[in-house]
Image (cartoon, rainbow, N blue to C red; front, side, top):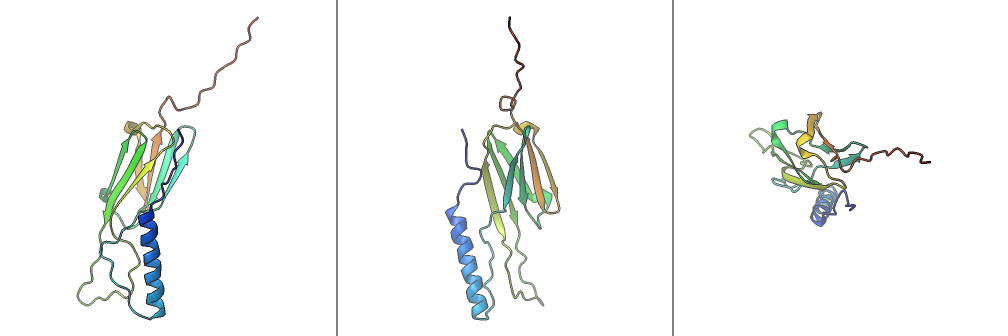
Length: 149
């Protein structure tokens, strides 16, 4: 059974459109943007399939390894965490706040079953990489054809 790798999220689309409109009006009216304390955001991901594994990469810049949680249940991978907002402090004024902050959760339906207990995760330069070995029953096997007399 084939599944879409990335489901359409109408709330993300509306949020992105709203943010774009706010930036447009802010620039046209030369005003400072409103603070976004708990904006909705979802990190962008790539899903790649090889002969032996599914590989997922998620952009999570500015986060620490211990702030990221990954779970695997059958053919669903969930990445969650929270990027904290740097609030305005004395003697500092933000003139533009475009980065998204707050909690996020991305659940990715995979087109094949994977071995969650053998998954590996690494985090480098703001990119989370998950390598999820395919379940044995999913891997293609070559069958030798014998000649019969």
